[in-house]
Picture 1 (tube, each protein chain N blue to C red):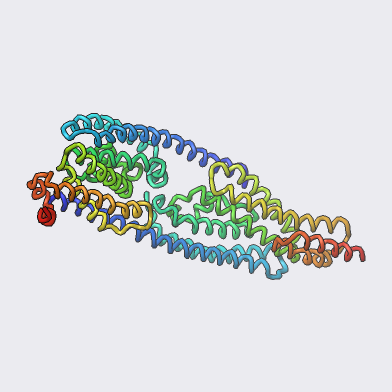
Picture 2: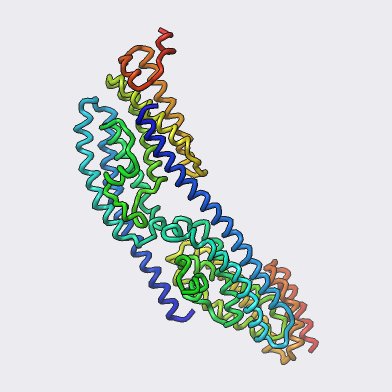
Length: 235
Length: 268
């Protein structure tokens, strides 16, 4: 190889290293922000339902704070190279998706869509080949959400909220049904999906306990189309 | 079914479609990449075979090998031309992992043919040119990493080429040339190892190959300096010491071989 070619390659490789470092700084920044959010959101397990809205309000500014990081990453990544660098930030991004999805569920009770998530995190559609939320990352975030909700179902009852497990049960069931429609290849997402049934089971058991003892209003069961005949027969 | 439930289902139907598309594409690319690896391996064998034939004009013969190899590699370039749509835009980096092994094998075969034809290392730009359409538009951006890793494998082929041909006409000069060339590769690649993770491991193999060539070259030089022998006789002596380099067998056998060689040479 003559000196010219060596230098040419060396320069290209140096540029990549520099870029990697810059992206890593932003990924670390995103990581810090998501850790703060997760820290706050952990309090849902010990917060009575009427104090939840202010808790969520304290998370929202941090979600908005992610806009800067998103823009910074989108500006760094060269066109068409989204998948080349994606691994750098996919972990914090999954956590960000989870945080956005949890906030949405706790405030409206519904599932945040992929485009809504992008909007919440300030990720623009025209960045698709540089920075976006890959379907896989979004789905990872949703599985984390289901894991967390199964815990919440238990802890909400402890705090005296007997309706929450029923809402959660319907939600996680829908999620599970959705995941069942996908042909997942044998990767971490698939393994995490396999664990989803345990979350489902855990929530169902809580619903069973609550309905057996007639702790929740029968109307809330009907509202959520939950079949309680068998448990009421038992009493 | 509640409306919430239905909307969840609709969302997932869309994802299902996208995931299926990408998985199918991935499978197609894996198959293509296997074909490319296979064809490239065949070209490497072909080049070795041609170079092991006896030839009057050595230079002309390696030009011929180069032409045959380049012609065969056009089949690989055709495969790349057909899968280029699957690798457009951000798809290339999305599916880089399954494509990468075939690409490295192709670089190895291509640069081997190039070495036989020109005696030089094929440059990054030259390789990218073979992966472009008639207007010079690349099918996809060639990653520097795959280029370097492919070249790193080339040194192993050159070792085999130098040693298996050492007893042939012109083989000794060739071994010396290859030795210098691989030495150059080794020191060039050393500069790149901090950037390419997999290159570190391959450099160890390159070093081993280089050592094998150096030992073979040493045997040539030692013998030709001490004894003023006609080339045909040197061929004789060296062909007897080849097996241990080619197979890298135990040292004990080596020393025995050397001993018997010495005894033999004393007769002259």
